[in-house]
Amino acid sequence: MNWQGRKIYAGQAAGEALVSSMGISFFGGVDPESGMVVERDHELEGQSIAGKVLVFPTGKGSTVGSYTLYRLKRAGKAPAAIINSECETITAVGCIIAEIPCIDQVPINELRSGQWIKVDGERGTVTILED
Amino acid sequence: MKLISEEKAMLAGEQGKATQKAMEILVALGTIYDAECLVPVTSVQIAGVSYDNLGEAGLYFLTEMEQGGGKARVLTTLNPAGMDIENWQALGIEAEFAEKQNLVIEAFARMNVITNCTCTPYLTGNVPHFGEHIAWAESSAVCYANSVLGARSNREGGPSALAAALTGRTPAYGMHLEENRKPQITFEVGADLNENDDFGALGKVVGEKLQSMEGVSIPYVQGVGGATLESLKSFSASLATYGGTALFHMEDITPEAGQFKPPENSIEISQGELISAKAEMTDGDASNADFVSLGCPHLSIKEIARIAELLEGKQVVKEFWITTGRPTKQIADRMGYTETIEASGAKFAADTCCVVAPIKGRFTALVTDSAKACYYASGKNQFQTILKPFDDVVYAAIGEENAK
Image (cartoon, rainbow over all chains, first blue to last red; front, top):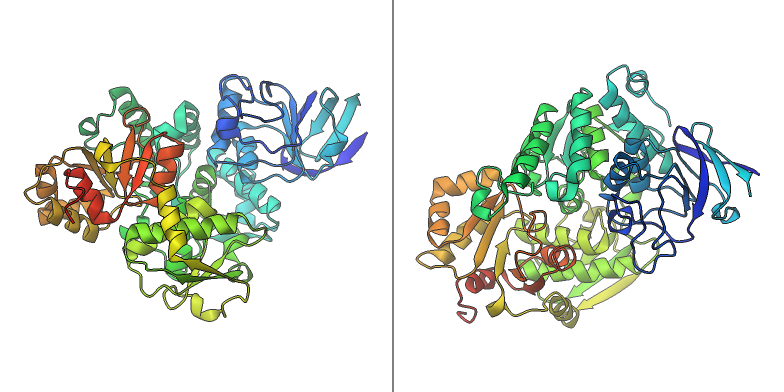
């Protein structure tokens, strides 16, 4: 399967999908040193986003969240790539400063955790390599 | 998005790595929000200055931008830092924090950013005029600049404001476009508004109502008999905090209000609602509180003069921070207000404030006149809060709660 989305930040990555139907607040919601989701009652609570192709509808919360993505990158715990339905300022800026490939306008309800996914940020394409 | 040749050159890295990164941020935001082009800006206000909020990663990013040759191309000022840069020891700030905070300030200075650390740049030399395109990141100042001054700014984050500074541009969407500045709902205020805490409570009520409605973000406020610079800065701060609001119109008070008819969709706000809002922001007792602060947003010289008048010959019984911008403090020095205030045992905290200083765990309950300060004190710092009128906050600091 293949989708054409919109480029937010360039770069290629492949990895295991981690899909959330809930928005993510990086500041306060994700531990910047470990990459664990710590937001109480979040459907990804207790799971690590490190190295994953992180899929969620849109970002939320404080604009400081952009720096959280940057911190994750420095700690080696950033997601390999991010896919959104609609990207917003916090996630977009975080991906640019942390250099994480990012695409939006992809039908994310077609994606499931555990799938092996390839993201081409420059072309804005998402490919499922392995179900 | 259409870019002119100089902008394309910036994006291609021809003007250095930092400018390129800045342009990447602006182009991505322009793409997300369907901007047709970038618009030149003449003024920038950067948030994300306190080391308490930035952390090591933020400092590293700023250092990288500075070493990548980043230079501000337009007038750029800073939000409050995590400490009084000249007098941090008196506020109990640790040396290790001060060292990191100074590195942040130095990185900005090397990028030609004016290191005046204040959330009210419009009081001290960064004052856009009507219709001017700007890129500001302090939410209370964005709301004030759009609404009271009639300038045009989106609510920027720290990195996007820095990006605007290093390129002199911002994507043309949102508040920059005339058609997006129309009021969408009327609030008829049927309550007495005198003090900063009244205006702060009104900001909370209006802001929370806006948050609960889909697709409505610009209020038209009727029934406010009069307002001062100080009450408008309190209202702007509270509305931005509780409503995420970038712009309001206030009948007979703000400059764009006269261009519009009040929207027919209308909500009344009663005295009772303001009283309830104040009660929601008060969950402690002033006599047991261990921290008192005025200056959220940063105090005007008029407010400092009033504090000096009230503290003349008195002694404070609680830790009392007077937070303001450095230039305002310098006028207070000249006028003798500083001497009077410091003789009482109260402390000036210039360049910083009770929202961004690293004070979590140091105090348990804050007395303030600021609705915005209540929000951050209870959320970020987990203090109890006590909201009072301006003068009563000073009385609480000197242990004369019932003086009035």
